[in-house]
Length: 309
Image (cartoon, rainbow, N blue to C red; front, side, top):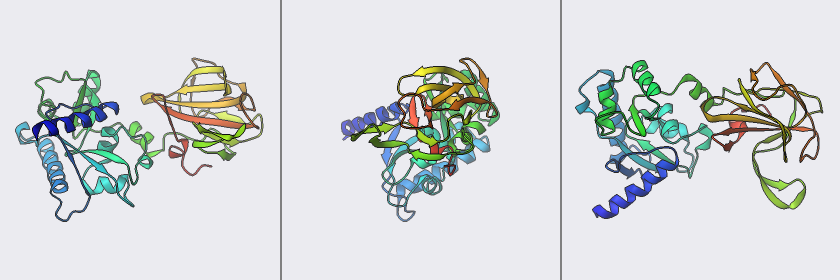
């Protein structure tokens, strides 16, 4: 029984690691079956532990009063979403987005599996010591709480769970889709993010990494968010392309341009016209191809700029 449980924990911890999360093998991993408050000992335990952690940290009680850090897995059921899980488990937005490495609440729906800790807090890179120190000072979190929760005598671990920790206002804004703006004032969306028919070969299907917005050649294109231009030139398929680097691993891509108004290395704001739209590269007509990526992963721009097109 112990061997089977250890293997189960190891597999789940490996999955956590692929999300940029790690934990000690000694930490408990359990499965939450549903979010019903009626006769649900696991859910009751989560809610009780969240309350106990908040009381201990905010009241500056002894670290020994903290519960043991546990991770549960939960597969969302019909009509459930990010906000429902948040409410039922007594967690906060920062906790779920950090632990699950989410970029938008709209990623979460029926069938999604989430990792749910039994306390509020965030996952941070332990090697970023300045960040850890700042978080502890800002939220008035005693380092002893972090050591106790993470079962360590020091803070020198690759990843740390900060009980009652918070993400920055900017990270929260990015998550809620309020940190990017539309790169064009006017235009009509002609192709969505995701799998589609190849516009050059109707028998093939391809994954479209962004959205296409039809607009006349010469339409002004603005930076969707403040950042630094890391590429301005020709790229196969994209034609004339501008790539802007933003905070926290985000980049925005602007393809099929006719003319550049910026060069690599330029620092830009949302008021800057970075290029004019065009029909260069692999294109069937004048339009802007727009992408948002995080750490190299393509994300749906409409989760960041909702209701614009």
